Every structure is written in structure tokens, then in C-alpha cells.
Image (cartoon, rainbow, N blue to C red; front, side):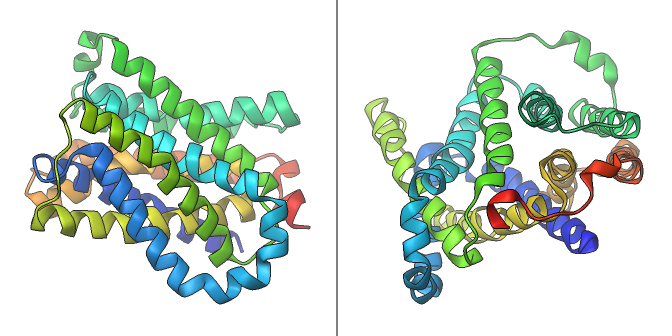
Length: 304
């Protein structure tokens, strides 16, 4: 079961790393909020087609837990990405990558404050190593770059994005015991509904860009992999090993994003990329090896 969680979380973060590359490729081909809307429009269409019979079976449970399921989509899916996309209009990609690496730490903190979940010394060491890996990636191998960073409005938005995804992750403990198809369909609908006001806001600022053919290709990719495959696998990983341990894998996103940029858009591969990946994976391995006994594999309370 633990190996299933590891594989699920690595694939999920790989998909999200691909989303970062897609975001770079989308510039000039589709505007950020319109991309957010269309990715969830297509994701909802896909998941409804394959899940409608199952959704009908699960509807009595779904209706009872409708608020929390919609919350997952509005906060964890659309809220996080909208704030991330908006933050990048004001702050640097370096700032955003490092600030996003605060998600695992905030998950640790919230789980301790709210549920008294224990954190071992090895987990803290592992988290620190993954953070160094992220910082190394963001700074392009030169830590002196980090000393020149300044904070602005975009960094405040990134803080809100980090809080949103951390809250979403720990709230997964209250997900109802329903089939994964139903579990994905309703949050995806919530994400779609949550994106509609953002499109109107973008249009009111004359910033809306209708997708061209290249933009539609990017949109379909984000709908299938970052929106559906990654979210399903991330939820599965949290279900198996818990939010604290699963959240640490999020620090693979900027590393995978950088490596995919090398492969897909021809950016140069440097030694620091390999070192960063080794630090991040090593940090996760140390955290997993030295996790507290009380974090043993179990189903979330809501699914028991």
C-alpha cells in the first residue's frame, strides 16, 4: 500500500510539474483565468461522461457531503491555481517556487495544532533537505541569488495560495467514502463554478485571451493530467499515508517542472538540477524512514 502511495504521489507531482511547463507555453495563447476555466470545463465533461452511472449510485452520500466536496474544488483546485497564476504577474518564479515549498511545513503545523499529529526529527530533517532542493532549483544553482529577492503583493498572494492548498490537503480527512469517480466529479464541478467569476474579472481588465489552436492543445493537456489524473492520485496518496507525509512530495513539483522544461522546451540541464532532485528525493526518503510510529498507514476517519 505504501508503494502505491509513493507511485501515486510521484506521478501526481510529475503531472503538476508538466502543468508548470504548460503555463509557460500558454503565454500569449490563452490568458491565465480563461485557461483555468476551460481546463475545468473539459475536466468536468470528461469525468461526468465516465462517472455518471457511479455518481447516481453514490448520490445519497454525495448530497449529504456536497458542501465539503465543492469546497475541495473551489479552494484546492481553482483557488490555489488562480492565486498562483495571479501571483506570478507580480513576483518572480523564484519567489513563487520557494514559497510553494512552504506547503508541507504548513501541513505539518496545522495537523499538529488541530489534530496533535506528531512530527519526528527525521521528518524535519527530510523537509529541510527538500526545501534546499527547491531553493537550489529556483536559484539556478546560485544561492546568492536568493539574497537579492524582494517581497511584494504577489508574495502575499502566494502565501494565500499556500494556505489554501494546505487547508485543502488536511481537509481530505473528511472526504466521504465514495468511489473515486464521484469523488473527482463534484470537486471538479466546484472548481469550474469557482473559475467563472475569475473569467469575468479577467475580461473586465481587458486581459482575456481566447485560446488559439496551440492554446486549446495546452488546455486539453491541463484538463486531463494536472486536473484529473494528478488530483485523483494525490487524494489516493493522502488517503494511504496521511497529509503530513503526502504533502512532502509537493516539493517535487518545481524539480520535475524544471526537468520537463529541459526535455520539452529545450532548456539547459545543469548539474544543480540533478543535485536538487537527489536532495528532494533523499529528503522524502529520510522523512519516510524516520516517521513517527503513530503515523502508521490507516484509512482516514471519514472513510472507515
